[in-house]
Amino acid sequence: MPRVLVVDDDPTVAEVVLGYLRRDGFEAAHAADGLSALTIAAAAPPDIVVLDLMLPGIDGLEVCRRLRAVNPSLPVVMLTARGEEEDRIAGLEVGADDYVVKPFSPRELALRVRSVLRRSEPQQLAGVEPVLVDGDLRVDVAARTVQLGERELSLTTREFDLLAHVMARPGKALRREELMREVWGWEFGDQSTVTVHVRRLREKIEEDPAEPTRLVTVWGVGYRWDPAVASTGEALVQTYGDAGS
Image (tube, rainbow, N blue to C red; front, side, top):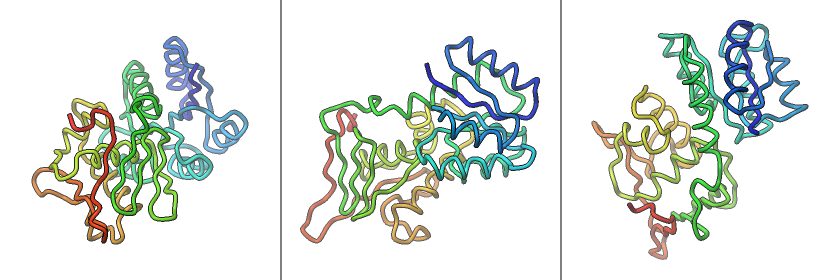
């Protein structure tokens, strides 16, 4: 049974969310503030965190940073106020995998939680040792590890899925709405989600994130993966199941 930690200082919201998640098959715990959330997460690590942005004491952004410092792959769904685009962007910038805007439907939240959890499971990309290699960048899709040169990179769930998706389609211009559908599982939504994750990913894989050479912008369309060509002439090696479909 997946364990969800719900962090919200509004007792009414928390009660409704906890009740719905439990009825939907989750084990749900509650924290009313940031410090309590960190304590509970340390004692009983959750599978996913539903985190309100506005909290007393330590705010949601700082809680997310601290949780991610301990477990970089911990999925986080941020709760934000309606119309506060800057808050949503800030949440994504610190590593939230998804966000839900208040007021929200508990059913919508449960669906988002399941979607993020599903995306964090290695078997979603099951295959015969699927691996992507591009120059000094190596992505083991089965193990969900990324190595750049001698360094192992720490990517969030969405960053990893985005990287694997674009690397598996070298040279193809991918629209933001396509990425939202295929990587996030959203049929519609705020496309700034994609923009923020691309920016975060570039900071980890590009030599100069301001002048990207791998994950490049296709103006008016979206993004494209331009494979590196090593000095030996080796280009992208791909064994990613049905990724070419």
